[in-house]
Length: 448
Image 1 (spheres, rainbow, N blue to C red):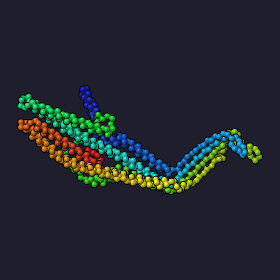
Image 2: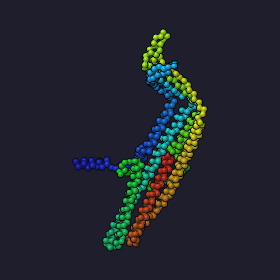
Image 3: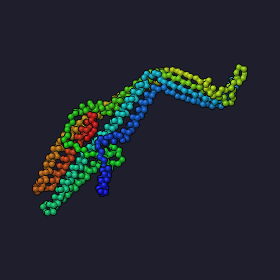
Image 4: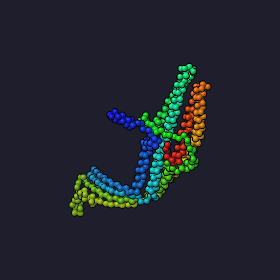
């Protein structure tokens, strides 16, 4: 019974230590959450959010308080002479001011910053999409290389059988030693091809781990996905996909937001032509103390008048003020006009950026459509070539078994069949990626 529990526990540990295989969805989710470029742009977005809060806070009044302490020593002029004037003074003020009218500058600036916030968010989505596409491409590359490994393993098994048979026939003397040598060389070539295919799988997995920015890439692996051998053609046209892409792709949205931001900045700049009206209120008091005497003067009877105390002076000297300030721009060297022109240039540049983004998407979609059509035709041709190569290999095996052909012919037929299988797999995954790329631009999430 104890041994049984040991076996069960050991199997449980093996299950816990089994290597995790990542799905495409897991890879994409992990990458967009941990990628440093995404995180950096998220900080940019947070900074823009704070800019928006500050723009809205401009509607609030500005309140400030100040306290000033001054000490002076020495003589001061008095009539034709001078007198000693050692003095300490203290003053405290509290004031507030608020903008009443500035031709809507505050509201226009808020709208401008809101568009900047939108553009920052779309920038994050653009980076996420770019990373997702890179991962999808590398993921399909890994699956392709795994399929090529299976093809190479099958080729090694067939070469091994051919070698074993040649070894027996050579030993009994029915075939020459050269037949065994050729079978051994063919087996070595297939083993080399298998090792190359395995290295390519590791290279593709390493590329994905790099995109995920994983520190431990040696144990990384992806799920084996069964890709159907029968592939459907792309039904939607490039123009239909483009119409959808122009509406939903974040790089387009970001460019459009930046056009609106540039236009809003022009309106903000134009407000500098208009006057600004602001209001202010304040309260304050002060205290004076002559350091060299307690007498501040004499009354009408000639008796000395002593200094009042700190709190008494603050009470007696307390005052309030309020005011309206109208600032009318008259001449500032023409800078406002030049700034408006500069803002309009920025509008034009933002519109060009939008057209560039549309052109890039248009080229990517058209290329993906062309690649999809070409890869699908290549796939169909490769399937036919695979069938013919398989039939030729079967005939070569039977002819060799009957002694009507040589082992060289068999090896050539086997190589042709393996190459045809690799061509089918290559065309299939190339077409699948082109199809996924078109679906991505059409708003369909990446999946396998």
